[in-house]
Length: 358
Image (cartoon, rainbow, N blue to C red):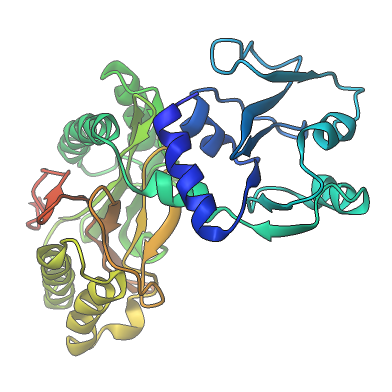
């Protein structure tokens, strides 16, 4: 168990007026214990109380958890997990649950009267995960360094006739060669009009003169994710493309300049969005400005018009404005920023100026 992280969750629970929580998000369990499995349909949970030792519920098919927790309940496929759960949970208190607890497990707890009430308490762990400690920051810095190197490799592969899928496959192999454990998400590699789909999956489309090229890529290193997007052009870009590119670049840079403790996440979104709106492409900026990142590529908390909380030291998130014109092109420029005590650090160093290949 990571006692320092559990202490933060304890304080968060106390602020919420809760004394116990059942955590079922595998990444949150990993954050608190160091132990990770993908449980699929099997029950997997960490029960945490302010006044009792944490209990880790694992299936016998999972790898041994004895090095990660001292109080382990081992379940078999034919076991009903509820008797063990009911022994652990204090029925005289409210129970906090996270958003990953599915109805299959929650409803029987309610029917058995496992607690006096149930409250969504994901934020008790989410807020702890949102403030990256020094070791987490160092892992994210290293992950982004690998991502910079892989972005440079991708740019070097731009040539007529290469396919999106070829570049994606080469990238996945390169991540492993550079020490990453794999991608933090399926890479987005888009040529031409396909870049107007922000989440396009690479296919057998071949690169042709007159196409924009969008690379949105990330890897996992020492458990932590990186994420970056760059857009280039193959051939001679049109005046429309150049105008849109410069708007996205300005929006990215303006938002990044504002990042420091105390500024609102919504202020960052508005700073970028206003530049694109004033340039006439407001309707083509179709997503929020960014997302939080850490053990997962997308973590709770975002950079959007609806998030009015202040930025705090240790927060890590993306700044990724975009313009998408159906049938023509898509442009996105994305960096990760890490909030420091008096400002921020940009984790990506691959240049953002438009690269044109002929």
